[in-house]
Length: 519
Image (cartoon, rainbow, N blue to C red; front, side, top):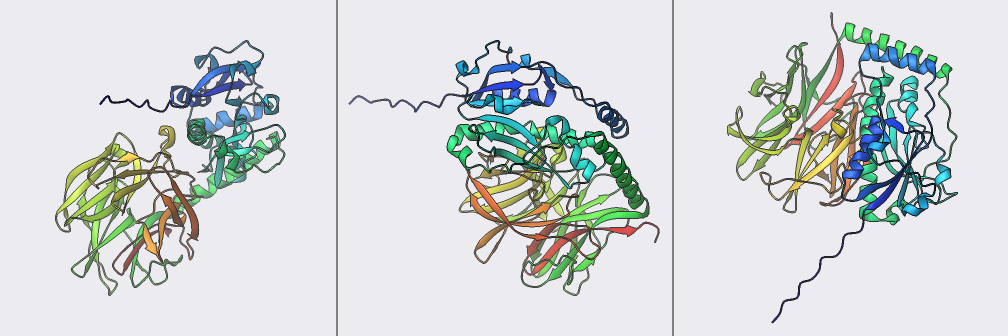
């Protein structure tokens, strides 16, 4: 009997993208964004059109940025010719190129390109959704002391319709430097065209129709008065910050309590506080119960060493605890010692992002001796890896730094495997969340009243400023969705909370506070 070969279904053709720029020379981050698109297997750059020359930045803004760079470091923003992507076209009629997407760059009026592309007119946006030009990205947030800086990609599908947000992200504002704030923001924003086009290719125009509408509002220029306001507000902020650091020691410390439930009082009422010596911090506690005894593993970081290691204490119901014992140290920073018991073995998976890997250690003599077991992932920096098993599959939640930015508070990635020590694969939609207000993991996932929750760090206005509890709605290799249901913000003199874990009836957390340096 003759066999019949079934032809594989043909892949959809790549999305055809046209670029319409206000000048041939564009910021390097913009060109690099579309170089990545051009290398993808779902989109190609088929048309580039550039107008004359971009307007020069006003002299007072240029002067401010030069002074900013002298104080905080950084280089002037480099511009690159769009011809590195594709030779600019001379054809005055882009309709002949059968475009799927028209992406407008710079300060062009995007309404000129309505009807040019099948899936509308796209452009970067910054600030509160309606956006402003990339030349102002990150300016107003620093000037106004805003805790978050927004960026994204917006799309107007048809003439006369309001734009929609094809991608949106929120970063923590760097409060003392426009240049630093811009550099981190733009490096991340360069990832967004790739992500949004990938989703369009995968899901079709129906996905765009469901994207959030952008509210209508006029754009306000950033005047010389605004620049002077920025100088004043940043100077006052810098002076206040300098005095705080001169007069106080800023520390993370541990706290614990015994009792039912996982509720955490914002002022740590009912918790026993474990204060470290003034020359170090204690953070990221994970607990385990063995034969009625309770042990807490945590990051210990001596300020002089500038490198963390893992230590352990035993805590007791009478509120006492043992002296810390150092149990794991490497040449690189270790923190967030996640604990997993499996098949009679106890494993620790600390954060080892500085080594570019996710490493597993096995306990060979409880509680203090651990040996390397396996590297689960190599060649990528992931912070606070958090593990969860469900229906025969393991899940890892961790934050990554977009575009090699070293900015790890914003973007949540998921990986999955059939076994803890097996082969780990990235989630199809990584990063599944891009929001400093609740992306970075903050401890074990837990069930309450039949609902799965993921604790996350609120990293604005400062790192570890509070806890966000998120209800997990969907978790598959191709989908992830969650919804914030509760925020726990510190009170009573505390400035931060960023880890929450439990073992038996022991709850452990950490908190951030200032102690008088000379008391």
